[in-house]
Image 1 (cartoon, protein in one colour):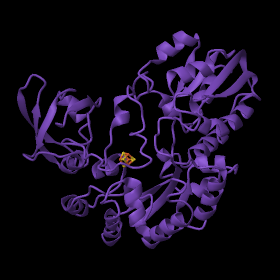
Image 2 (image 1 turned 180 degrees about the vertical axis):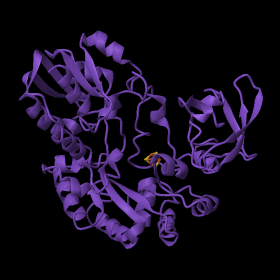
Image 3 (image 1 turned 30 degrees about the vertical axis):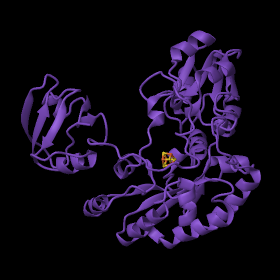
Image 4 (image 1 turned 90 degrees about the horizontal axis):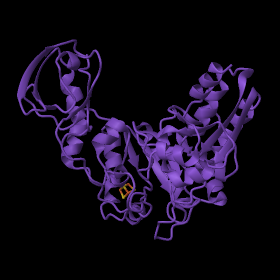
Length: 422
Ligand code: SF4
């Protein structure tokens, strides 16, 4: 995979040099780059010589004089320019493995690449980390990483990841500690495997690594109707037990689902620290509620408006609280409509996995002027749903107008819209 340019930022050095999307950066200062880590490192200079292969095949050599830290304004197609390191595991709970065919291509990618973990916050298992990778991590002071630990019991980890190296790979955590390389840990909780006493053991072992561990997130295993193995889902009893165990350790946060299942209030902001594992559903509801609490609402809007949130089951808790306040605005009626996931089965409750048929079934008979959906239901920068059908198709099928909220942790776009109608 070459270092292919996907976008050139407006007003940037790259634009001035007429670098175009589709061009390939072959080298910087006669050195080829493996990934964005090399690129970012090499760009920290006052003078650069860049070799560019243009879309017509011509090679140009460009000399650049710039400020030391100044960005060139190039966005690449991929963060790694060689091959993404593939995952070598077959985890008992792997969501990728349990998906049916025909969904969005990116949902079938099984990467386990320390570079993507460093650059983009993806989770790695360390089962494919080589000595040369460790040498580079140490030399370039890379980190923090996001590590799917799941358990610190080597035998159990082999069983859960279905990889004979998975237990030994835990030695890398001690290597991180020795070399002061920080990481965030993730535990996918699978009842009957790594819960209860095994969870205690894992959290205790991680606490021994002191400051090397920046945070620990516990998330429940996701089970769909396509799973063949007999995994159990987290139930109320398991959620209560997990929350109680987690509360004994510092820097450990459970995802929102545990609080919903245990029928406990979503904890206050301070529980989540820096919200460092937000992408994993840890603190998303609290962030949304906090953001809304700080918004000033209009007392009324001019014309009567009916708004309907098509929410995931996970977000329902927060959206219902928000809707209660929005309904105090004169001339506004807000309803919350959780999308029932017939496609995946009831247990899947996240917005990013909602399919068009499930959305259409939820909203088609609503008496509403506008359906609100979060952008995570769509492929980034597109109007495609997970199943390849588009928002235009959903509009045609339902005859409804849709409002796509870009920031899923904020109600600002909705509040601004209401102010524009006040
Ligand atoms: S690490 Fe496990 S869960 Fe992640 S992609 Fe690989 S097999 Fe699936």
